[in-house]
Structure formats: structure tokens, C-alpha cells
Image 1 (cartoon, helix red, strand yellow):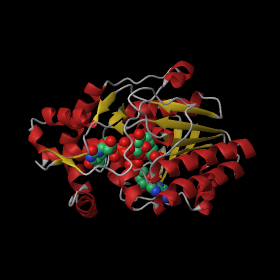
Image 2: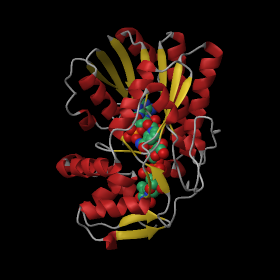
Image 3: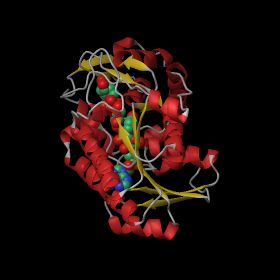
Image 4: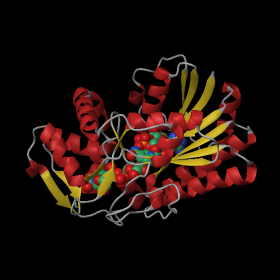
Length: 337
Ligand code: NAD
Ligand code: DAU
């Protein structure tokens, strides 16, 4: 039986990953360590909260003693590190916690992986470490890191630490750099769920700048299958780009959401741009496709329909998430924009 420590498993991608592993790979035991920040939500564990192969622990990845105790008590053989501060806009207003969790937290996990001689350390990174693209070209694993936001700088710093621990102490690692994920359980600060929530409530849809910024959208389930393949099949020391081959401008995505929800385009409002906004991301995923035989299974048209349907069917989840602190966040981010 594989015995995994998954961090950030109460967040968006982490909870989708834990759900997928527990349902498709029954020979796995997962300790799910999550600090339950604003983005962590026990309601994201729906469907597997009582699974005997899953144990949830509330805690911080910066707590080295806790990590060592979890590894020893649960005979952990690999860590998959999803835990992070993940929102670019928040990193522009409050960068410090991004360094604490994304850099110090990853360092703490690496020290434990090294000292406990774990079989594998999988770092969940991002395509944003590469910086921004012009109208042409794609990020490959050889593209030099050139991060532009405090968020992506903290993720790039973590990637460098992971590689350094591999080089210096032989920690067996992999790094996954995926493009923008979307799907069930995504916190409505990110583009797609924020726009769905606003449209459902007939609120304005705030498009930054001209709305022609391009992202490469990846359905979250497909990212989870890619991470699983990396964990179970990749040689150590390899980095993999994971992308959906679905480049779309933000305006196009938002108009599609409005169309599906039968709401008017008049809800769209162009607002002040994000400082330092990266113009375009696009992933060359040929390495993971050729080496690990992975490819995305969900087209954007299918994925966005599944996603909108999920939010329509889970309005209680959405209502709980947007109550309380979310209102303050929304006010501070968008009121005078
Ligand atoms: P998220 O914000 O939804 O979830 C992050 C989770 O980490 C939350 O449950 C939070 O409580 C937890 N967490 C935060 N700080 C912690 C700490 N100090 N100790 C323990 N737990 C902590 O993020 P997400 O969108 O699911 O992203 C997961 C990972 O994937 C991140 O590393 C992110 O950088 C990366 N990533 C995300 C995307 C995307 O489109 N969402 C794309 C590429 C890479
Ligand atoms: O590329 C991978 C990254 O994708 C991940 O590493 C990050 O964790 C994740 O948050 C995401 O970063 P982005 O900044 O691309 O995602 P976000 O959903 O915040 O924004 C997507 C695009 O939509 C971006 O061009 C900014 C724009 N946008 C976003 C919001 C929230 C708007 O126009 N209006 C908005 O209100």
C-alpha cells in the first residue's frame, strides 16, 4: 500500500486529487495536512471524509516537528505538496504570507523528506514561474524561470529549493508545472468561479484591462491524473509541464459563462488592470505526453459545462464560501476598481 502525505488537500486541486486517488487507487492511504486558511474548506472533503484510507490533520507545513511526527506515525513514503497561498491578486496586496507558506513551508517539507529518506517528493508548481509569453510560443521545461508576481516568485523560489535538495542531498523529487485549473470546489476569487458566482447573482463581471489576456485552461481532474502519473511513473529529478491545450482570452471565457447561464453580456465591466499582469501563458506538454503517456481527457467546452453545472448544483457550498470574510475581500479588491 502506498502511504502518502498530501498537503493542501482541503483546497481546490488538493481535494480533487485526494478524491481521485481514493476512488481510483484503493491501495493508497492518504494523510491530508491542511492549515485551513480562507481557501481551505472541510466541505471540499465531501464524499471521502469518512474513508478509512484518509486521515485529515489540521496543521501548517511550516511546522517541522509536526511533519516529522506525521511521517513517523503514518509510515509515509511520499509527499505531494499542494499547500500554498495561490492567488496572484492577494500576493500583490499581502506578499509576506506567500514567502512563509510557499518558500519556508516547502523548505520545511524538504528537510523532513531528506531526513526521513522518503521515496519521493512531488512539488506542485505552476507555469507562472516561467513569466509571460507574447503572442507566439509556449513554455517548455527548458524555459528559464522568470517570475513576475510575488506569488510566482515564491513558487519559483520553492522550485529552486526542491532542485537544490535533489542536487545536494539526493532527495528524489519531481516538479509539476501546470497551467490554469478550473472545475469543482475552486474558491471564487479565481476567474471562472468568481464570474459564475457574480453572474448567478446578476452582479457585474470585473474584467481586468482589455480582457485579452490569455490562459491555457486545464480541467482539474486532468491535472490530478497527470500528478498521479508523475508520482507513480516518472523518474526522479524530472520536471513536467501540464497543460490543457486550451488557450482562451479571458473575455471569451466570460462570454461563454454568460451564454450558458443565459445572462446578458452587459454584466461585463472592464476594471483597472492587475499590476504587472502577465499577458499570455501557454504550455508545451509534449514531455509528459510522450514520456508518461498522459493527455487531457476533457475539452474546454465539456469542462466549462461540467463546472457550471457543478456550481449550479452546489449553491449551498458556494453560499457558505462567499459568506463572511469573502465579502470583505471582494469589497477591498473590487469596490474602487
Ligand atoms: P487553493 O488556494 O485552493 O488551496 C491551497 C490549500 O493550501 C488550502 O486548502 C489552504 O488551506 C492550504 N494551505 C495554505 N497554507 C498552508 C500552510 N501553511 N500549511 C498547510 N496548508 C496550507 O490552491 P489550489 O488552486 O488548489 O492550488 C494548489 C497548488 O497548485 C498550489 O501549490 C498552486 O500554486 C498550484 N497551482 C494552482 C493552479 C490553479 O490554477 N489553481 C495552477 C497551477 C498550479
Ligand atoms: O497559471 C497557473 C496559475 O493560474 C496558478 O499558479 C495560480 O495559482 C492560479 O491562481 C492562476 O493564476 P491566474 O492569475 O492566471 O488566475 P486568476 O483566476 O486569478 O486570473 C485568470 C485571468 O483572469 C488573469 O488574466 C486575470 C483575469 N481576471 C481575474 C479575476 C479574478 C480578471 O480579469 N478578473 C478577475 O476578477
